[in-house]
Image (cartoon, rainbow, N blue to C red; front, side, top):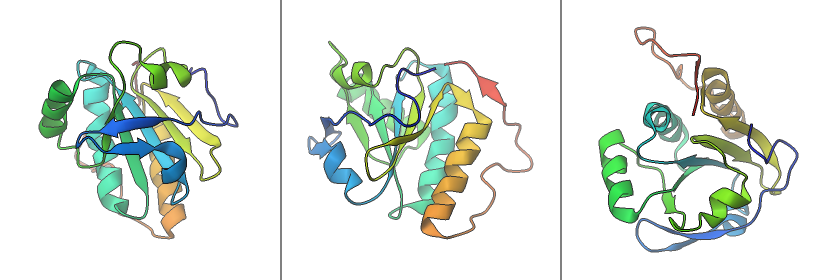
Length: 164
């Protein structure tokens, strides 16, 4: 369980994205709620999770934002982004002290937070939890007032849980 749970105010932060541009949580929340997805490139559960997050991003791109937060350097993160087809923004936490990961109380990755526009964490999830991912998808659909196609395909086996 992450140290920050539902009802907690998300700590503000600023990090660089893959293009060297500064991203501020508070500035981004002024536009739309966010899903923050912390990960490490060597984590098999992160590798399993991120293609599903990408599906959610593609379903609602522009109206809803997923932000990846890497615990790796830029070069390794770029390779992960390419390999797993990630097109949503990815930020780089400091790989020496992990200030943002620590501020959010991470003990495992992936750890995912839904942060409302007022900065309140409305959902937190550690590892792969199919139900949590479905809840994020459903919540995003409600936000944009659209009924999307099913997230999971009939012919694919999707695990219910994988520890991070």
